[in-house]
Length: 423
Image (tube, rainbow, N blue to C red; front, top):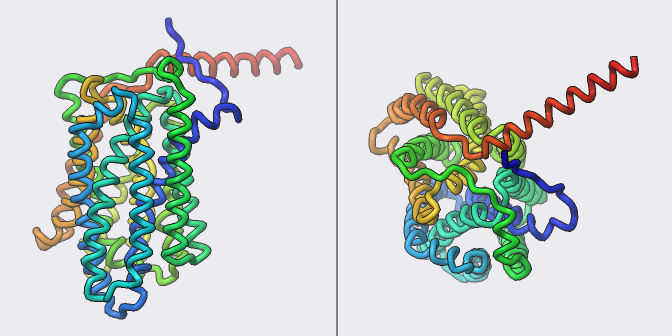
């Protein structure tokens, strides 16, 4: 039986791990900072309704742009990685996105208020295009360059570090320029690490480090899109009903608001470790359960005439906890389930589905004239999603899980033997 071995994490391996951790940190930080963009961009506007309106418009536009960017990446992303240009391409994408942020901050002060909204539309559309490409490229980087028994830990750690960075800068109360410079520094570090890694790591060395998961070539791979869509449809409802219009009304203190919204995402670090220890399914199904609890809170809120503030805050917290479990799960598992010949194309469909779910969750309440109905429908489909995740194969190799069970058993046996001898 082949045993999947795992090397110790030492300082000599930091160069190997840094590119993925830094990239995940940058993506996580930028995604979190998106929710602050309007407060920072419109400090001179007193019309709060305009702020809410622009928030919804820009977030919807960002979701549409991510769908388009992910779809476009399916045309060329496989070629980039098969020709060994993927890491360099990802580094270029990171640098382009950060340069765009710097240009935005440099130009905005010279624009009149009448054209600021138009500038935001163009800016976040281009950011979405780049982000769609970065997401698919990052997942392929996970698949082709890292051992299957380390992927969850590395991705989860990156997401957690992005959250910590965001919270620290929020606590310092920095302005838009400082936040943008932080994003620029992160992207430069990530790009430099990627370029150094691609230079020192030969194809032979990289091939030894990777253990393939369970790629699917049948209809089950399309079943995986159902949980993705439902996951993020409900998160779209949370963004639309809680984060955009009500978060700062519910919690007036900005720092406390950021803690409530983003501190739960630190759970992604533990989620990544569990994925590499007990399997991917555990985290995915746990994320669904937490999301189910969130849906129950939301249905309770919508059923009441007066919404209790405690239930609204609980919905926010549980919603973010479920995101902390689901996001690293999606990044890792989608890359492992993808067919070997069409991994990039499948990932482009996955991230397009995710963005489509968020988009649907945000527009469904307005189209149906109700928050309750789309939430109730999504909650019912959630039970189907649990079954789908249950029947999908475990992508962590079964021989590695058996190896961990044997090692755990031997350690317990040695402890018992040592105690019996001592007595």
